[in-house]
Image 1 (cartoon, rainbow, N blue to C red):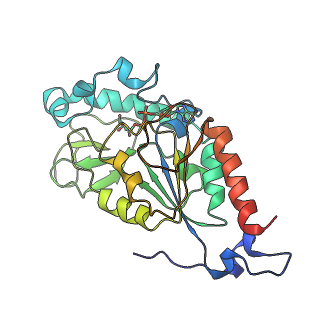
Image 2 (spheres, rainbow, N blue to C red; image 1 turned 120 degrees about the horizontal axis):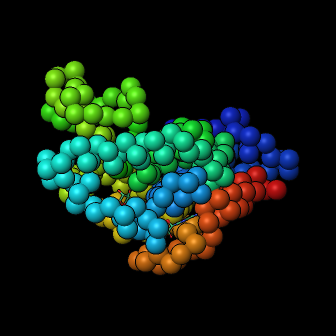
Length: 258
Ligand code: APR
């Protein structure tokens, strides 16, 4: 599955002042950015497993599983209503913006575990949400029936066009991750992989990094230690809002020869 090759004339980075042939003149290189909750932490959205993380306050089994939905749907809806409210109040930070800037120079695919829309609001055009999207609702009889939310909350009695109860468009623990094969195929074709703000604790998503080809540099931006079972990963031990803009600038300088 090859992405479109975009030639030099469309790329600001390709205006070589030295007249030499640059990489972009032969087609943009493919960059996959794989993000987790840490990329949105500085936008005020709590991560899951840090010391103040969401899973310190809530039990996964009570709010984020199909069993929780069967047992106490009101509690589940309330949990996701709060997440939605916080997302709507948040703004993209410098990391989201730096990732969006990369697409002026590279063929960029964002693959995020996050359910917020901060990558899109920062301007990223190609964003895959592995674990769903908080601003969408889904039919409980036809999982392909996904729709934008009309308001800030979802209630019992809110129905899909087929008449079934709507649920949050979230991949819960114990459910299939339908976009996983597509994400793996994208990473397998990456020329560079950037991993930002994920503890790599949740499978199958965490296993995706292993699909990166051997020749592709892999960078990890996270202020904390992350168990990453792959050799040669460059760990940039910084917060996303500083690490990501710095990496983006060096990548852009690298291709434009500046
Ligand atoms: N910049 C970059 N990374 C940060 C920052 C920051 N400012 N603050 C925290 N981090 C890092 C933490 O060090 C940690 O490695 O972000 C990571 C957050 O990890 P988790 O809370 O486990 O979040 P994530 O990896 O996205 O979780 C995966 O688990 O609960 C599920 O479905 C949920 O998609 C989520 C999945």
